[in-house]
Amino acid sequence: MAGKGRRDNSDGINIGARSFLIAIGIIFILMVATYVLTLVIPGGEYARIVDESGHTVIDTDAGFHYVEGGIPFWKWLLSPFLVLGAEGSGTIIAVLIFLLVIGGVFNSLTACGMMNYMLGKIVDRFGDVKYRLMAVLIFFFMALGSLVGSFEEVIPMAPIVVALAVALGWDSVTGIGMSLLATGCGFAAGIANPFTIGVAQSLAGLPMFSGMWLRALSFILIYALLLWFVRRHALKIEKPAGEVEAGIEYKQDGRMDKGLKVFAVILGIGIAIVLSSGFIRALQDYTMIIVALMFLSAGIASVLISGTSLKELGRTFLNGIIAIAPSILMILMASSIKYTMVEGRILDTILFRAAGMAGSMSKAGVVLFIYAICLVMNFFISSGSAKAFLLIPIIAPLAQLFGINMQLAIVAFAFGDGFSNVIYPTNAGLLITLGLSDVSYGEWFRYSWKFQTLNLILTSAILMFGLAVGY
Image (tube, rainbow, N blue to C red; front, side, top):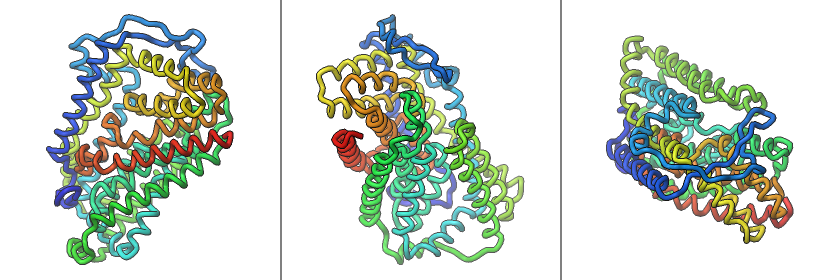
């Protein structure tokens, strides 16, 4: 770490002790707060049914009823480990394996010199038009999130963009803003996001991806805001050109060029497959696995081509896994918060009481209230599709009762689901990216809360515009 928000790319994977301890501390406080909630909020649950597609959804006709709640203290204490045997644990395990693959590959790429060579090559070519490159990268990552619902799948690319940002004279948070933050914004704009818009519209009985014009307008406006925000910060903190160039060594190397070409081709195939998942629904459940396999293949092939021996590859790969392993505890602790609420049977109670608050609101108030409910629930349930199955059966009758077009309610749902993924400390993708970039959660929060505030104002205005024009 070469200063605040800076990253020394010669040392491979590095999870800073300070960043790790701050994240662990914040998550533990949230775990304690959640346990306290199970002691003061009564247990309750909605009746659930299996719909025609085989998905479990809330039965609004049967409604809600109170039940015995609470969770034993020992169970809460062991919840970070018990979560591995709970419903939905397959996704958590997949994320953990994904994390270890990323750690191993990045450490090997750095140790063989491939990362620094790649960064030097990019800076040599685009250093004079770096703000144009910034605009293109932000658009690319937003498009990945908005068109195919990528989020966790971009994690392997985020540290590359972070390292590139530092090499161009910016800092690590600028790199995260250009990659993961952009992806989260695109995910929320949801032009054709199958995991939020697609699932929600199907549950509401609407044609999939219909009403696209307002979401496309949202994409454009949010892109403009994000580009302005990231560029403004970069201009404020960028290093002088001479100082940046002094830290970059680039000399063309045929073997490294060949390794980079192989890396780009294999990873490009993986990205193409992920993009095609927007049209081939059978691929949507396997995009994270596909990216992990392609990234692993690309990393191994390019490192071997660079001249690294198989033995050295194995050693650096293992060292990368060991270095990234502490992040596993952060992810398990963050996942245990939802587990505690489900086991304590307070999640449905919170949702029931929140929905009951809408009774005396205006149409505009209800639209913003739907947005707020989704923002709150996203703290506990980061999966967009899981949240759709939970919330849409409640949001749909609420929208009908107040005469609100269901298309607008779904946009409010998508906004509430997506943007907060890149600020909530309960989101595994954010924790992994911050760990790989050696950026503390506190540093990231201080950088991104201003954007989140501006974006909240912008997206609320978009919802009010949609209501005014009868969207």
